[in-house]
Image (cartoon, rainbow, N blue to C red; front, side):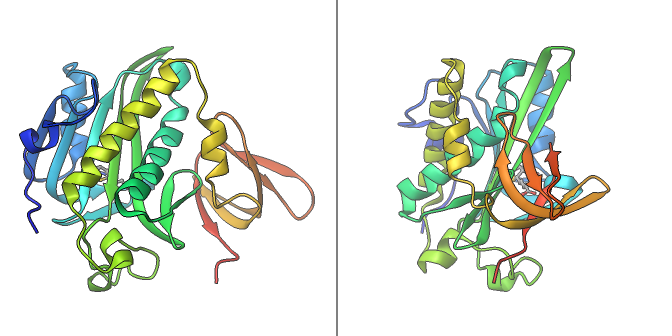
Length: 260
Ligand code: BTN
């Protein structure tokens, strides 16, 4: 299958006005986040996409590493939202992935709070959001997206127990370009919804697999267990403990404890 990428192959016929109208492509990079940050600091056009064939030091959330060999999708998108929209970016990115995966492959996926995308209970996408904010001004926000597209997860024991890929799920290779273009279209669509003053919170909440489940959440040095009762409009998780008390967790990583 032809999976070679170029800026022109991505922008040709791309049905967006903003996101992906400027693309910088690298066959290999340490991390698209590093290049996107440099570009954002120089005020690259909003919607600029930094995309890579293969990352050698992909970054995950909470200082984890992210595996992104050739055949996977790894890109970063530069946006200049206002500060009120910042908490919605995790919702925007995870919903964009849920929609894109379904459109291109027919697979249903779900969101594990805050923004992991799972297919059949296993992680298929990771999202990393970085922003620089001064007072009430957002200098820039970068949405980093990694999708296991054509990855034989069985070849990677370090992620195999908890991860999957689109090709693992479907038993065939997936055209990488289709996924990339659809993700860019969906990111733009949802970003325009936000800019129009509408909310994407309800849709994100309704796609969360986490709610009503018993979870263990690490947040910084703290670890909590309880039932994920709801999410607030700012994206925080509301965790109900056995003793009836409630903790609001702004950022963290959840493990579903009742997974088989
Ligand atoms: C996570 O689930 O921990 C987030 C993973 C985010 C990975 C993507 S791949 C593109 C971008 N560049 C990076 O180095 N990381 C993000």
